[in-house]
Amino acid sequence: MYKEGMLRKDALKGKTLIVTGGGTGLGKSMGQYFLELGANLVIASRKAEVLEKAADELRASTGGSVLPLACDVRNYEEVEKVIEGTVTEFGTVHGLLNNAAGNFISPTERLSHRAFDAVVDIVLKGSYNFTLALGKKWIANGQPGTILNIVTTYAWTGSGYVVPSACGKAGVLAMTRSLAVEWAKYGIRNNAIAPGPFPTEGAWSRLLPGDLKDKLDPAQRVPLKRVGDHRELANLAAYLMSDFSAYINGEVITIDGGEWLKNGGEFSFLEMIKPEMWDQLQGMRSKS
Ligand code: HXC
Ligand code: NAP
Image 1 (cartoon, rainbow, N blue to C red):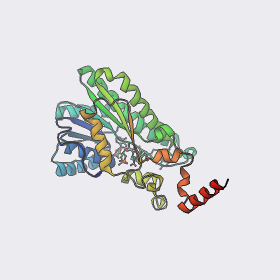
Image 2 (cartoon, protein in one colour; image 1 turned 45 degrees about the vertical axis):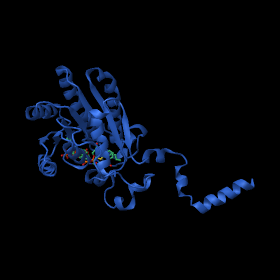
Image 3 (tube, protein in one colour; image 1 turned 135 degrees about the vertical axis):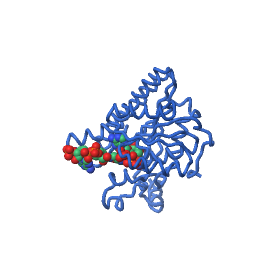
Image 4 (cartoon, rainbow, N blue to C red; image 1 turned 180 degrees about the vertical axis):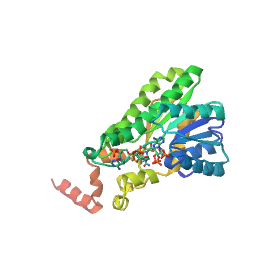
């Protein structure tokens, strides 16, 4: 059931949505579902050839309108050009999905300051560049809009070994909640999704490099004992981009099978205790 589309077929009909990092991984999967629901899609990232190929595939599989526009989200002028290009092609923009990210694992003391910048700039600066450029336009035009930001659960717990990403995502979450209040008067909603592990080439190659992916199974950290299916995330993202979620504003929705709570819970490790041992422990309790 969770591998199927959830919303009715016209849920995003007539909407023009920009997805950063929309040529690969989760951005591409969410964009594909937006197209299936009737949206016009703009995918923006650095690699023009990756975008072109993704756009061809998305058009072929959905029959929808896809505009690929190359851009580095760290560069404000390039971000403005994507918005201008979208308006030229489709007349307006209704929604933005800040999905582009950079990340890798490293002990923090081994990072150069440029490595720290690279990740924080893609995640935080990239998200505020698009948010600011589009927000200014919407407010000047008296037009409502919807912004959805992809963060992670360590945006609030923090995490060693991915510290630049944690800093960037925490900033994006702060922006989401701040603007949800400040820009509500303009009809601009701001929400976020915090996914747990969803297999993608981009994330897996950088977060589980080499044979780490064979040694560390991310599913074992999840109470539901599986990783996420792209369709599950796409269903949630489409709902939050659609007018069905019109009263949801300033929320971050976790979709991680219970992963972060399990790993924060002091006694979650008792999962390793087998039923026979619980029997023994129960016996000890009744004797005392
Ligand atoms: C340490 C590294 C490094 C690594 C690069 N650097 N990779 N340092 N470990 N693995 C350093 C470089 O040496 C350089 O510093 C600086 O970072 C900038 O490197 P560039 O290659 O010039 O950067 P750039 O071309 O801007 O590429 C950005 C990138 C790259 C982040 C480094 O990996 C990228 O393009 N990523 C995009 C896609 C991505 O990361 N997807 C995963 C998202 S997954 P010096 O000092 O040498 O100049 C995700 C999941 C979250 O976010 C939650 C999971 C549960
Ligand atoms: P991905 O395929 O590597 O996606 C990252 C995208 O960001 C790529 O399309 C990349 O395209 C784009 N990008 C990177 N730097 C950019 C820049 N400077 N300017 C413009 N675009 C840039 O990885 P993913 O797993 O799908 O991740 C998508 C989102 O989900 C990210 O926000 C990530 O943090 C989040 N997330 C993923 C997981 C997971 O388990 N997969 C879990 C939690 C959160 P180019 O290389 O063409 O620029």
